Image (cartoon, rainbow, N blue to C red; front, side, top):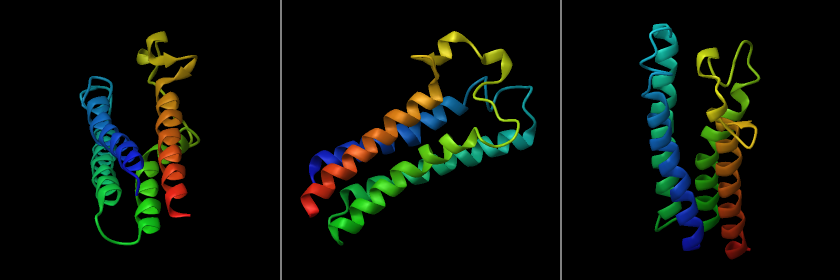
Length: 138
């Protein structure tokens, strides 16, 4: 796999693993007294999942052995799962990008909720890393 692809996958993996923890270990999520325990349970699930996906992405991005195409597909798949699932979360009933008290202009980037912008950016980086890697395989 080209080093450029591995580096891009690594960037997405680290942001995914660390970023979810930074976002959820906050007054808007885990330390929000308005959130019931079960909502906090799901925040814990999401942050644990982000860390595991980050580790798997790093493993396949830098795996010294194995089939290059399989490593590339696995790295791209693990790098994108968190962001795809976050993109789909808004379609579930009664979901919001922000709780009303946190729905502030500072939480938008170019008119989009910050989460949507992060999804676009990190899925785009993953796609570029995949396509760059695919060029070396084909």
